[in-house]
Length: 396
Image 1 (cartoon, rainbow, N blue to C red):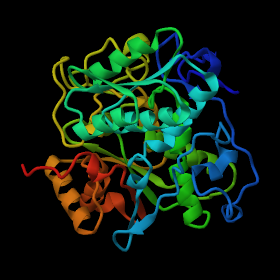
Image 2 (spheres, helix red, strand yellow):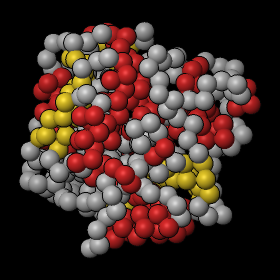
Image 3 (spheres, rainbow, N blue to C red):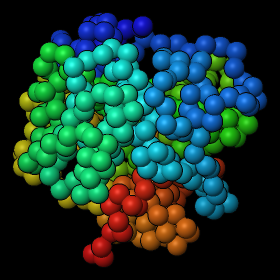
Image 4 (cartoon, rainbow, N blue to C red):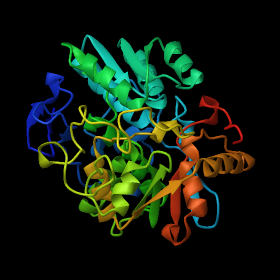
């Protein structure tokens, strides 16, 4: 197997060590991996109808526990906007793309148990794929998580642990468990194998569009795992000579929790310090995009996180903030934010078009509908989770 490396200080670790973060700065890992050359979009016919058809581009190559994830439909919404229906995954969300990678990695490493933290969708995906792999799994979820999501976690035999407080408290609880011996932390944020799963979203678009990508890709951003996966795929496809034009990345956050959008608009290369003053501060002068467990939530003083319908992207301090901001800027893209009423309206609009999507999953359609010149040209939006997970949003 290849090895992990820290993008901040260069620290390295063997995959087999079960070290879930950089021991020096407590930041997320990146992965040493380069995809194979010599595969064209028109050479993929006849392969498995799942994301594993792109095995030359994946660090694990193949999986023994696949549920047929990937290869979701691409359907038009307008003359210029299409939607990729990632809510048609086995566990009804795009998180299956990364969860199958981490579950397969855990199966190969053989830990005593697997732990994860999630506002719901990643947890349900990990529960399903750990069940498929025969691995015991504990999922930490914040209080207020949809009852349907926790029911789904239990149905797959995993143990949900409800943590008082919001998403930040839940992550801290899971990371404390992850530090115990013999534990594999299936972190969709800290483990880069997850990003190598989400990047297949863009590989599928490349194949479906005959060896090209659209002019712009709108992506919902909380921890940024889909956006960073897409950016990774774009870089790989370009380096391999499989695309010539790179799409703009349109990152979408909800107004109630939009730390990355605020930093982007301030011209900062990392999250803004509490109080909203731009700069390069943060622990050890590296900003707050790495290990941040000792810092209060962005935009507050450690109190409750703002309520929003888009629970899946309500992340006050994403650990990969610097990478997310850099990826959007390098693409020539931008950040858009949507209000709660925009989410309600977008969910109703999609339902009227035959697409029942959960409230987080409609954020990109809400942004694109109101985005004006920022979403010019051909755009693809992901519909990331099924409406069956949360139901329709109540009127304000």
